[in-house]
Amino acid sequence: MTGDVVEHRQLVIAGTGIAGLTAAIYAARANNDPLVLEGDEPGGQLTLTTEVENYPGFPEGISGPDLVNNMKEQAQQFGADLEHGVVETVEDDDRPFRVELTNGDVYTCDAFITASGASARTLDVPGEDDLMGYGVSTCATCDGAFFRGEDMLVVGGGDAAMEEANFLTKFADTVYLVHRREEFRAEAQWVERIQKKVESGDVEIMRNTELLEIHGSAEEGVDHVTLAQNESGYPKDNLDDPGTETFDFDVGAVFLAIGHTPNTEYLEDTGVDLDEAGYVRTEGGVGEGETHTDVEGIFGAGDVVDHHYQQAVTAAGMGCKAAMDADEYLGDLPEAEAGEAEAAAEADD
Image 1 (cartoon, rainbow, N blue to C red):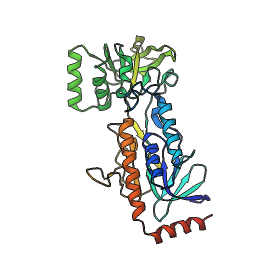
Image 2 (cartoon, one colour):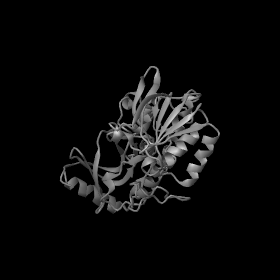
Image 3 (cartoon, rainbow, N blue to C red):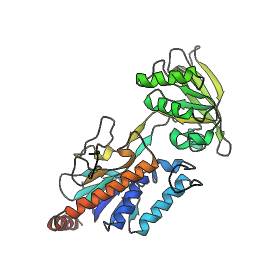
Image 4 (cartoon, rainbow, N blue to C red):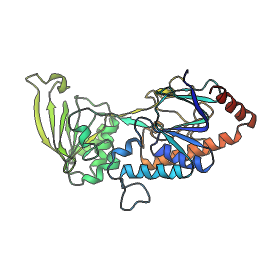
């Protein structure tokens, strides 16, 4: 790394989603002087949710942006510093850790919490961005109840799509599962479970079908969608084929269930163990140290670790654990080592 060291901190937290901000609150209250880096998606995925009804303590619900802003204010009240910055690399060969941002700034730190989340994959079709949070969602558990009694469209063919479709049958008139191929990638048990929902009339499967456009407005929500269908599959690639049918279809909500991409590129050259999909592996299990990674002093929390639950409240819980694990780690650092780390950082100034 060649950038100038801006300053040394006891703790740097990457991410200002629920996990990162909860970690910041706990770390600040523990006098660990946290610096929280916002990244290129400040507030995380919750900022795309217009109403949050399942976060404890808000019987009337709260908007995603309001919840995030309240947590930022709370973290800052206890002494956390928030800065906009996207982490480019983390160097863990020596201590202190060196954290370089995309703008070239470098921070050093004794401990690091990765809470940079996972970005939901989207289709980049017309109407998707404009209606995200207004009838278009990437989380059935978060938003399904808002569309009770509506026909709902789920896009995807893996386990996540099956799980979303199954969950939405609690609220939908009919769930339409749209998949661009004939065969599903989902495990057999999920396909069998959804088939039972088909037989009961709760789900209808639309194979070899793709979503082309979402129609509606922020005021009225989703009105209808445009779909393409071709018996050979992948109709988007065959729009000029006479066998491809394009048609409008009435639904009140669209759920994209085509996976998430963890924001962990900056950890690829470290000793932190990532799974095949790029999620951070932590110790997990029962008892202390659950958020430890394979690198002493680096901890993981939130959707960057969790590719199953992906809820605000579970992210908050992991953020709390990560801050407590980091606090214990920092408390066990020999004073001489901490002093050498700070001196090394100052020498770079």
